Length: 366
Image 1 (cartoon, rainbow, N blue to C red):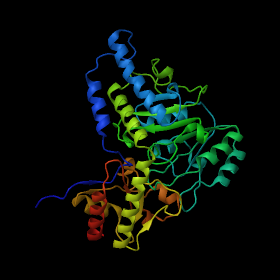
Image 2: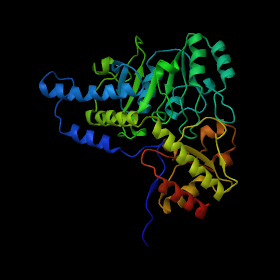
Image 3: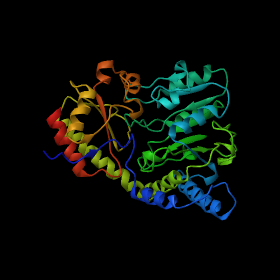
Image 4: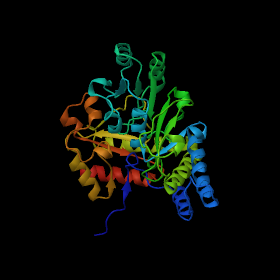
């Protein structure tokens, strides 16, 4: 039996490497030298790093000097949550695990049934806090695609003297504007492999004049904010992917929205009782979190995978856990309903044929 063509619908976990990124990385492999060395080889390596820094900075509308390269989005989140020293921390209950790890459970703010931050609860928490600290709020949820009111939350926090961090790894190329200055945030996390660059490279965008203690120490790289020789090949791929996203512009988000709507219409036609979590509010144009009425997610994933369709259950970094999604639980779902949810996420490589194949398979296995 000839296996079916593979359909990859897990871009929120990791997007396929873009051709532009692959080419930039191949070229970088031929470059010898430490970017911190002053000789000609080092200067050539440094030029690759700074070219990529300019591309990533341009993607979010900031000066290149504000971009700190890291070993990924999780490290960038850790740097943001630890770099400002002691002080209270607040975040939403639906943040990525790499943010929740640094915030006490008692300091996690509730969301409504759609997964949107309760701004009134934020105001109360800011008033009750012992002093100014850091609020961390994602721009778009990795499991449901639900957009958070970052601008409004940032205004409340800054009025109380707080700093604001935004995990925006899912947003570039999928929402209209991804700008820390427009949102009013001091720190913003980005990740290369979410937008078609390589895994293992991320960035933290830092406000001008903000003092940030390094998480990784022992060298003066990245203006003293992240020690260690930069991963030149990966950074070059990050820069190329960032340029590709910027060049695609709003047209790509519009294309993804059409594909997502086509996908959701087909899935619901095949299974009318299915629930799309977060569908009542603004979401990423590429993300569908679908709750099946009867079949648990592990069985759905297995059936889809055997027919050549790759999706996920919740966050990829949590896929090995047996507990239900903390995001869906925070939205009020019970364990059973949360355990029947799968995430389908589209991206730059997704085609109409991929969507139609997924719908056909869904009708057969569901």
